[in-house]
Image (cartoon, rainbow, N blue to C red; front, side, top):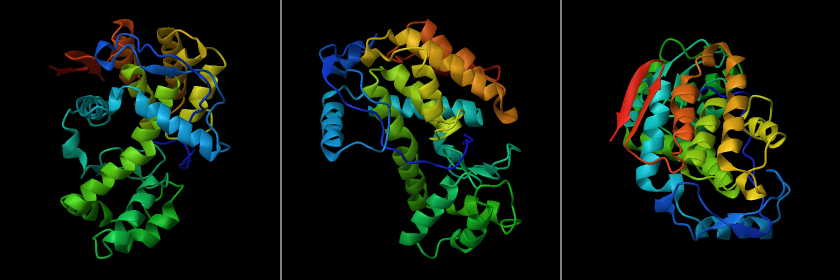
Length: 297
């Protein structure tokens, strides 16, 4: 859940010509959909017409990980790695400092006081709910943003977070930021890269853990490194091979950070699904994280 660097909300993925889209193993996703061909990497230089064309293409594709049941499964998979539970809805009030250099980690997606997304969440929430219990901490949150400091937050911030998490509107605000900053961009880019439901989840989980940064350990940096070694399916590459290389590169990045050196979320979960040929992320699923076994019927 820790993010490497500050958030960079970036327009994702290109559109070029459309080729046949065959989501590997996704029988429930439909075999007659469209797959985008190769194009530019993600970037801010997309024209309005290109964005509109991307939107149209995405609308024509199967829902994949965005289907309600698959999205719920994705959150369970992430929660198993982040909080050792499948009860992702029970994590809105979670908050602790896991000593990873990003300050407090909190909520359903691991918003961090040191990586801007927690500050952004509280700022947006306060605009609509100015009297909320976290508003008084905004000056301190701005000061510690980008660091691991607790200055101005202790001793009351953790209790204030937990109390606010009981409010439906704050839980909805967490959902909104999770989807807008992490889930939706990851799934969108995966679809434009020609990836099926498993690939979309692999992108999403990487976005959650590494953050949407362009550095060597940020999500977009990991994707760029992968593109140097393999073509995406939309570029004519083989889906399993591409994802295998992406996971290799991601695993190396995780090993470089003390808090992420346990790579079982890759080794005995995502890689297992990939080697099983479950590109549609079909249930039932059984996987292990940190040696603990999880099952979804």
